[in-house]
Length: 284
Length: 284
Image (cartoon, rainbow over all chains, first blue to last red; front, side, top):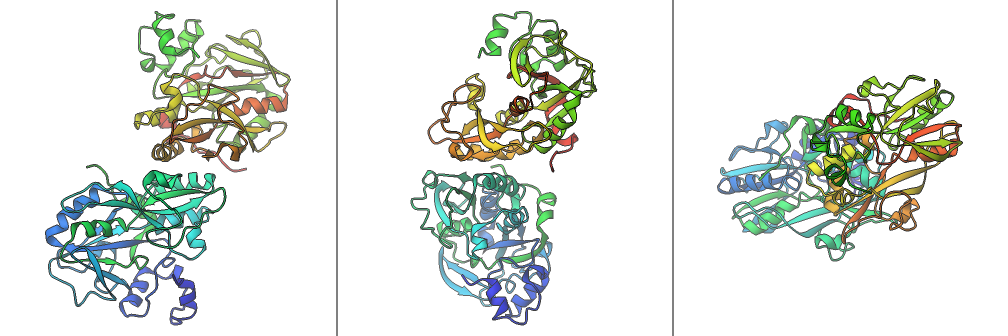
């Protein structure tokens, strides 16, 4: 994965500002105009970024229940009106243009990648934005904890587990987790800090032995980059926003749209407010 | 260790009430009158219990700084006035009589055990009450997590580590930890819940490999009962209130008094309030 630092330095000289300092609206404006097409990790520090799932209205109720039943992997930040590409609670957003890379799914199979949704948008599409791990990762970094894949400017390794999500309607399937390795003391602090960000996947779901959750070989992730695990480090596993893409594969809707992993929606929602202002999800 | 259940059922028939439901003042009244001399685990559910350290005024300043520098092992609940056995902030307490078993240290060596302090009390003695793990253990149990040594009606296993406390004046020495083993998922929740009780030792200091903190054989604790570790469980280690007894051994004051482990001071302070009302400690 090419890092934003390299791209900002070389390819997109028009971005004069430090990406971390850019306002979310500025990032979205650049993406909308085609002037920025890099992964959004590191952009607009302090603001929530989101995973995207767009589904036909006929399945939106089932998907909403699926998210509600699986709040660690699918923490809902916003739900759009049917056919409406705006998401006013997250900023001045047109979801058809404000993400740099989209994946198109037909009947549960990802068979296309586009840079805007103008050609595929329909009046019955409902947009879901789900929290992502960037918020808690920022909190770890502020606390002085090294997040291995960020230090290496890579993607987190992600794994399909043997933990089944709670199904709703046609949606179901396995939980996907992301892994970060820490010293035991840092792992404890990472658990404590991430729990404060329920909209960014919250506390981890597993620590230690990968086989326990059905990961046969930790060095071969299903998505993302190879793991970086130092001697004396323990692997810690968080519910991952790729989980709903598996659920789309199970539900096989005629059309579904997600972001391409790494190319997130940059929202106006402050990471710190996200913990305090929004209700925690849970229940059955 | 004889359980309070057995003792309440057999030896002390005058205690008609469920020990968990007894008011702290009632427990202290029974102890004061010699009518109750069992470990206090399980008594007065929902109220803070405390570790005791009594030191000459000449060392009280150093010990206070020692506690401040080591807040996880020595979370201060109250400090008495020199020579005054009362602790009004914790209830109607006479510290000379309201604990069932005391240990007497001369020059850092525990050389006596008494049931009251009337014969040894001095006008220069300063009382420190330090938080203990019962509060967070109650929170774990309320959350449906089995705490192995409590389920077995035993003491937690405790270990002297190779982690050095931050010294202050003559006080110093190794950190003592207590161990509880959980499934990985319960360990994560135990970390999250215990962190909410900074006056009950807060989040753990270590998880996983015991050798990493200098514990050669986890099956041979330095204090308490043998550990109970199920298959697929991970050991989690918390800072322990026995640590100040090690520091007394290092400082060698002419006189020091502690409780006998397990025989705690039952206070009027609600466990839930302890988190919210009192300042967190920290710093250097």
